[in-house]
Length: 312
Image (cartoon, rainbow, N blue to C red; front, side, top):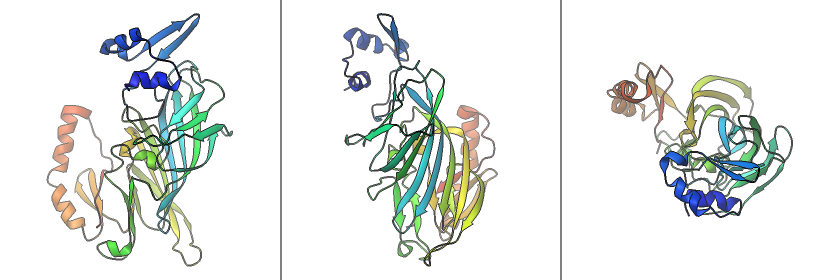
């Protein structure tokens, strides 16, 4: 089923043949208005068939991830806050997000509890999270959704190593597999898991071990002592002001060492691997950045650029 029929399937309306023919023309695909009587409906055709989200109605503009890393239970526990901008004129009263093997405990919309449900799993895309807003949202207006969430043992984005599985056998280690490519971010937190949607990010990650993430570090604070003989934890904070797609959400925690591989880039990995990783990357990383500046992205600036190397 193509993306257009998928869109109409959600509202139990079959896409008219004339509309399907028009959508085959790239010039008309981005936005079409359908007029029924006095009502006008704007259709932003979703291009990505691998998301269950209704990103044709709302776009995530900012994501705040607040997680505790639980090495003992091998899971992330916390909440995610999504700022969503309406791109239609109050034409839907529902937000639909991607999830996969997540435990959803609570949902708030602007501080109030809406009707929400986790729909049946639809392989291989996961389970859509449906959130009823109660009313439509005007074009350009934002709505804030706060979701309490835990990852599960079926999470496809994370890999957990015990102390014995690491090189120096000193500490456990957690990281993501190739960040979240291709559609694994939805197994970490509810999101619009498609490269068609990019948002800025904030990370507030509590862990007993050092943390790195796909953003600039904004500090470490708020030490909390451990309980029942457990290690104490710190809150590691990061900020990503350049909008990125969900699959670039990256996180790692463990016995992490870092080394400069250029005037504006850094590699992060285990202490035993840091020398080899630096040797592999330092000769060419700055050249790659300069080439990208010339040919694609313009001035890259001088952010922290971490390459999360494996530990096994």
